[in-house]
Each structure stands twice: as structure tokens, then as C-alpha cells.
Length: 239
Image (cartoon, rainbow, N blue to C red; front, side):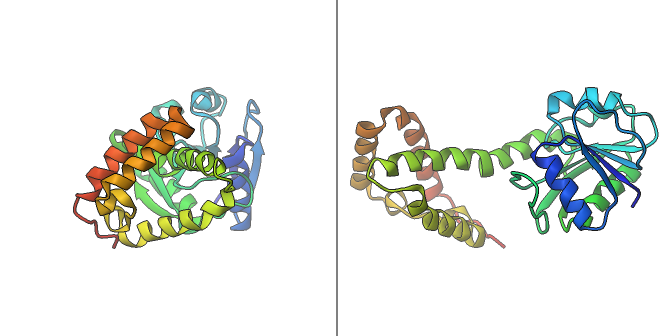
């Protein structure tokens, strides 16, 4: 692989630069935003979606240009030969391991797709082609699996603190739940009073939430409704 230039020194840019160096790739960067990249056969933009077009416009024609956004259109990188490579992973900085994660890729040509695939595979990622038409839905799934999960755990942490439990007390429960879901799928992994049809217990839970954190009731009710629907849905095959 030719020299990889990474633009963007935030969490993803820093993590990818370190990971690619660890995989034996010659890397320049991560360069700060606003720095005009030069040289290199591939330029990878790790900048916010709103900055992709401006960053791409500073690049002289020649290198393959990509971004790591989950849903930003490839057109933002025009007129370059272009690709996208989004690691399906929660990254908080240098030291992240990408091996085993999926990477959603797309490209403006067969060569661009090959470049995206090669980058992903150098880090041990599994490649999935996700087309322009499917990117927003793909990103929505990722947001539920990661961002919204953290929002839920924040609510759980808040209620637990009201009875003297710290976050660490919930961690084994969360880990076991995620592992059960990974092995068995959502329906088979579902436990608790709603799954058992225990209406009285679920009602007592709701009353307790109303007393302790009434602002969480809309979230609670929406989740309870979705959980009742899941409880009667056919189990999915995790394999």
C-alpha cells in the first residue's frame, strides 16, 4: 500500500493512525483540520460530516480520497476518485482495536472499492458493501446499537443511584445481557416482568419511576410498549 495520509486528529483519526501504523502501513498524520494534505496515494478524511466537502476541496487531484462517515454521501468528495469506509465500532481514541469489527464501504469505482476494502482488511475488519440508498438506515441501526444504548444506560444509572447503587453494580448485568443478545438474538435474550407477562410487577416499576424521575416516564412508556411487542415476536436465529 502507498502512503496513507489521515486528516483529522480527533478520536477516529488518532485511533486509525495508530492502528494503521501498527499494521505496518506508512502513515502521515493525523493532520489537523485545515492543514492541506500533500503526497500520499490515499487520503482519508476523519473530520465531521459538515467539514468533508471543504477538506476534500483542498486536496490536489491524484490520490484516492475517502471519508469515515457512516452516512455522508460520496459526492462530498468530488471530483476525486472516492470511497467511504466506516468502522462499525465505538471509538474513543488511540489504542482502539479494529480487528473483527465490520466496516461499511462504498466507492465511486471498482478501484475505489478495492482501496476501501484493502484499508479495512489491513486492520482485520470484515467488509460489508452498503450502498448510498441504504447508508442512512445503516447509520440509524448503528446509533440505536451504540448511542441510544448509552442513553438507556444513563437512565438506568440515574435510577440505580437513587437506591444507592453505583454504575459498576449494573455492569455485570449489562455485559451478560449483551452477550445473551449476541448469542441468541433479541427475542430469546429478553427477560424481566414484561417478557413473563407479569403486569402487576411492571406497573409497580412504572409507579416507582413516576415518583423518582417523572421526566423519564415518556422514555419508560415507549420502551415498555416496544418490549411488549418484542415479547410476542418470533425469536430470531443469532447464527
